[in-house]
Image (cartoon, rainbow, N blue to C red; front, side, top):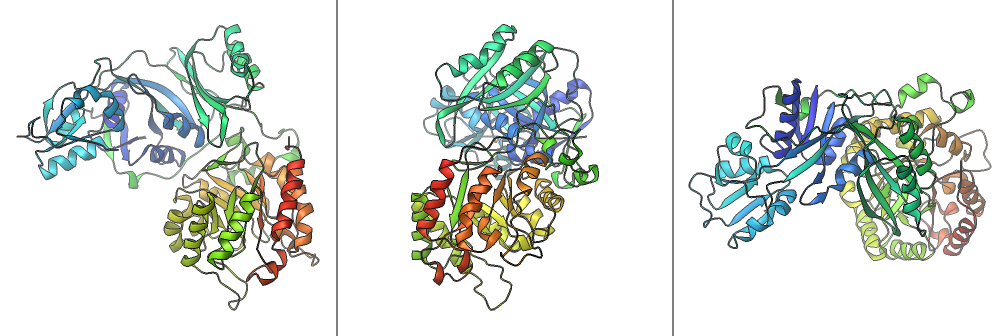
Length: 600
């Protein structure tokens, strides 16, 4: 059994996790990774059974990344761990306080030790993401002018000395962690039989008294709110999201009823899960126990089983009693992570301030291919003015014939980036092969997998590891099960931000370029938690028919559309027949604003 943490041997998180399993007498291998996101990825891909995420510090407050990662990756809390962080100043033998010129510390420790650091004005204070690795580097360089704030275990592990003990501003310096796992096979995570706590995220509407009404059912059920904290929603300046920790278990009848009542009052609601509370703050032992040995992250196994946690969340899956609404069991086995059961509340993919999969109908617009600086910037300004929220543009163009325009390549990527800087619109562009992925991920906000590459499995795995949202287009003759299985390749690499796109399939009909399968939208809404877009431009290939199909896409439940727009369509170097004029795009945007939001 493997547990992942951020850092290397000697870091605070390594010490906390080792101490936790040692106290429980459990044999667990510990695996250090680079970031908290990597912890979540290791758990969701099955390379680690458990992960450790910080959520609170008694000095610096809430670590939002912990809650956000549990939400984004659909992970479940197992157990709360409260640990006192005994901060010490560590350096090489011969170093002195007066001689220090650089002091490194984790951002958490910087806030915890601010008064002590102010007593050393001659030293520059620098943040470090990994206390253990910084301690190792100082030991290797033997630089007597550098020091790091860390636990005593880091000193003993890397051969450093303590220049100052207990440098935290408060002796009562505690951090609360959550041990996480992939969604368990039952609605209840294992319990030691002690008190339980439930964490949830909710979003309120911008209405007078909204939060008071939402919390009222908790007061009626006499549920203690252990913690509540707000945050502004990206792109929604007058709406707030709240983190809540409640001293109750979802399996308690009164609490369950209260949650049901709260859910109907929220614009967004997600129960992260119930878990065991810590019996009391733990002081780390002097060294990690042999019960928790380190392991190499690259050597971890890659199997993972994920099933849903409960059915409380909004947007529940289809009725299992209706065989027409439920895919065959063999199909679900091919895409367990993409299944609606995995995340009944649905996935929202965030690109900057844009949310795809939420309440807003998103419009992505731009030229089929980037042709020149004036063309792409002019189009970007025009579509932004008319309401588009993302800019599409092809730099690499897969064409049926080698004699057609193949795109400007990396020059096109640079022009697309410039258009994004001018307009502020995030960008969407197709990546065609594995060799392009790393560079495209540095330059483009959303990586598009075109219809011809839907089953290019090496490419799917590569974009799954790239850490960027992926727009996956349905293949020209692909079934919905095949589309979801392709999405599974991306999800299985730890990337939860997958957007599906219906762009028309090849049938016997020749009146249109493709046959736009709008019936796929409600089917996918029932079968998968992933957001779904429609591409009416490729669906028909004729600009005058795009407008009614854009309206239809919103009516049947798509989360948005992606369309091609060009300043002079007859002169377009690719897909000229389906490129919209600026005024035609404006008419479509006016139509869409008049259509009410979709409701399943």
